[in-house]
Amino acid sequence: MRIVTRPDFDGIVCAVLLYQAENINTAIHWVEPNEVQTGKAGILKGDILANLPYSPNCSLWFDHHISNKPGGNFKGAFEIAPSAAGVLYKYYKSQGKLDNHFDELVFHTDIIDAADLNQDQVRYPEKYPYIILSMTIKNDHYKDIPYWNKLVDLLIKTNIAAILEEPEVKARCNRVIEENAAFKKHLLQHTKINQNISITDFRSLDTVPDGNRFLTYSLFPKSMASVKIRFDSPEHKHVLLSIGKNIFNQQCHVNVGNLLAQFGGGGHAGAGGCTLKAQAADKAIEQILEIMFQNKKEL
Image (spheres, rainbow, N blue to C red):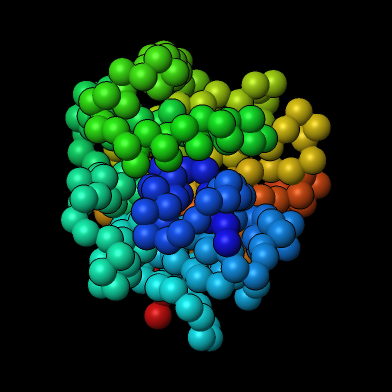
């Protein structure tokens, strides 16, 4: 039996809960959603899949993304909810396998994954322990697997104040604060507003800047949604596209997850992403933007 989840804060908290609820002594199998969708993830019988698209090979599945809404029978739990961790927590508490010990952790996971943030939390994440911790979780070709595993272990055994004082965590938090300051400059330089949508294109940069994904909503408050475009690697074989509704502006009616599912991706109603082949990316981006500009509600 393996835990199979994705390397973001929600996925890490899912792993924390699964280690407590199930008798698991194997290493976590970290994968991205597109690896499940394309069959590259290597899902095995007995695997517990969390915060990822469904695979018929798994034995239990937990998720909350609208684009992954199941069409048939499965074991586990699915709900359109703020976080997959919240869905999983509810399931195991109802079975008596978990108590209220992780209420605070799941509460903050819900807020972070649903982007239920205020302006102060976006501008000064360093003031909010769980938010700044979540920003230290990044996936650069799976180089950070030891760090993700460490966070799972720390969140099981240690309180948040002590976790932030752990030397590696503290250093990464400080790095995030520096990155966010630099990211603001890159956003201002590479973002254009088109029909109330902020479009940030980083494809001209050799190194893609990283930073607070919510900052664009604070910088461009009149935009109803943000689109971020960048290459996935120096080889420029694929383009990564991310879309999010402005959390401070509720004028966008498009179901982002369902839209991007048409292009091989997915996500929530309010945010999602997809991977495009570089040679076909411009045409796909044009089609996606046209749907965003129309801003129609799904019937």
